[in-house]
Amino acid sequence: MRKTLSILCTALFALWSIENPRLGALRTHGVLPELYEKLDVPWFRALDIATVIDIGAYVGRFAATMHAMFPNARIYAFEPLADCFAKLRERSRWIPRLTPLNVALGDRAGVTSFERNDFAPSSSVRRTSELQRTAFRITRRSRTVMVRMERLDDVAGGLVIEGPLLVKLDVQGYEDAVLRGGA
Image 1 (cartoon, helix red, strand yellow):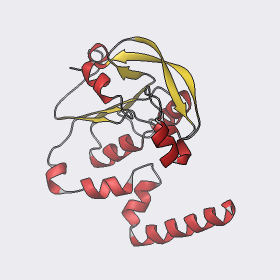
Image 2: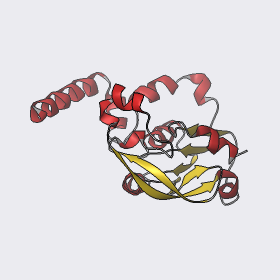
Image 3: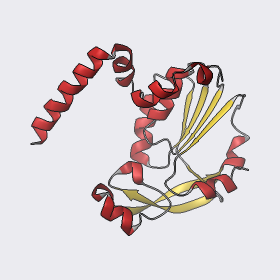
Image 4: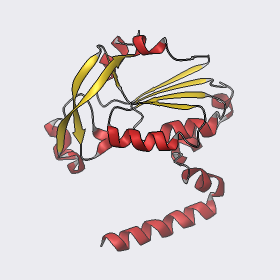
C-alpha cells in the first residue's frame, strides 16, 4: 500500500511539475510552492525584506521559501529539535545567508522540557491537548526532551538585523511566551 501511494504521489508531483515548472524546480529545493504562489505578488515583493527571523523553523522550508522570494535577505532560523535542526543546517549549505540556530525561544533562558511529537511539526514547549490527539491521530505519540531556550531580546544583540524585517512565528501555542521574550 505504501509503495503504491509513493508511486502515485511521485506521478502526481511529476504532472504538477510539468504544469508548474518553476514551482516544481523550487519545490526540489525545499520551497513551499503553495506559500510561494500566494506571496509572489507585487505588493509583497515590493516590501524588499532584508531580514527574516524564522521562529519554529522545523527543517527550513519557510526559510527556503523566503530565500526564493528575497535571495539577498539575511535569514535567522530557530529550531530546538536536534534532528530537525540537522536538516535545517544541511539546507543552509545552499542558502548562503541562512543562519540556523539550535535553540527554542521563549520568555526565559535556560533548559526546558519540550514535547517532541512523532509528527515533528506539532512539537512544542506546550503539551499536545487530548482534543488534538483525537482529531489528528498523527499527533498521538510524543515524548519529552530537554532543549536550550533563550529570549529573543537576549539573542537579537548578536544578530545583524536590517529592515525591512519579517518575523515568522510558528510554535504551536507558545507564541505568547516568545513575544514576551522578544519585546
